[in-house]
Amino acid sequence: MAANDVPPRRAAAGGERTVPAPDPFARDYLLLALRLDQRVPGLVDGYFGPADLKAQVDLEQSRPPAGLRADAADLIGRLDAEVAAPDRREWLRVQLAALEAHARSLAGDPLPYVAHVARCFDLLPERTPEEVFAAAADEIDALLPAGAATLPERISAWDERFVVPPDRLRPLVDWLLARFRERAERLFSLPPGEAIQVGLVRGQPWTGYNWYDGGYRSRVDLNTDLPVRAADLLTVLPHEAYPGHHTEHAWKEAELVEGRGWLEHAVLLINAPECLLSEGLADLGRQFAVPEDEAPDLLVELYDRAGLAVARNPVEARDAAARQAAISRALAAVRGVRGNAALLLHADGAPRDEVIRYLQRWMLESPERAARRIDFLEHPLWRTYVFAYFEGERLLRRWLERVPPAGQPARFGRLLREPLTPSGIVGELG
Image (tube, rainbow, N blue to C red; front, side, top):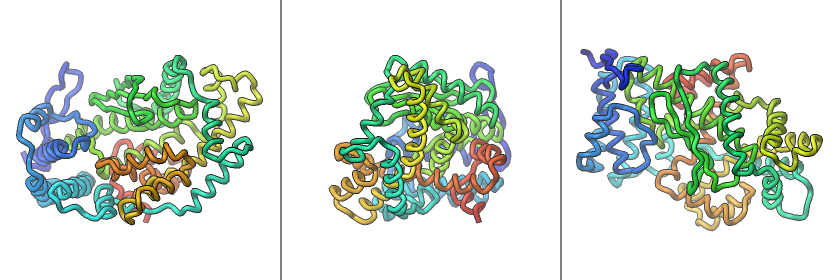
């Protein structure tokens, strides 16, 4: 069999579907990713490829960094000769560039911070002008009830009114997921048999997380240690589930892994070009799950279903919902602060205390919360990953808005099914 051919297919467990065996190039790509994960724990975010490859890597000795770098270089050198499909080849090219950058760092020859981020994401990170943050702060200040407290304190006081009681969280999640799933099915369709299991967990630093298990199945965990506000559910559930991460992973398993036999998509990587687009599309997914003109009415219903005090007065509830929808839009603009702070810390060499003050000022947060954020920026994995969300969403929003609203669901559907790359998206922008 030629390396460029679609490989033969084998029966899946239980006979429900068939899954392909990897061609030699995909096999070596999967092995490289799994071996790098041994050296950089957490680099592999999900794996549903051949179990024997995972078992092989688990049983072997960790490969030295120099060997991993050589493996990446070897695959890059083989790429043009062994991979015929142009879209597959370009996707693998940028992914391998990221993996080579990780191996290079492990071998003691790291790229400078900005160059490393650009290599990992196939996109040069950009600073967001501080005027954007100042305008967002002014808008939020005008939307909140007046008071003598600082703006972060007023935001905190406002948020406390909308925290969902723990015993109401599960029914709200189930109701919203059914609603978002129906809309995703209508706009983008869904692979037959896909499903999500939701868990309520504690002791995690995040609000929500998607664990994709393969077989069109995801586990979505929501952290109940942190207060969950009604408006948070309109962001986290579209992001993690419909039409975000779960929808993307299920469709790519169906169309790229099973349909085309491209087994390289059976491993999900952190700090690689694929995750910049994955986080960007997951953030963009909210506009399809919760169109802007529907957000206030949906919030009013959430207040009522959650049993919040504000729901007792319909006029007050409607006013609060309209304000909250506008505040959420304004707060989205300050997400670029994290990227700016990472560049201050790692590219400019600014002192830690200065970066904490920067986060506090522009993210409109308490000193304690700003100090916790810098721990994220200093983490070996997340110091790079911090750019995936804002940069991914910013790039894809520009690309999505190049077509009229009526054509945007179809364009978004390409993100769910095709092996696109950040540089390819930039090329389409012209």
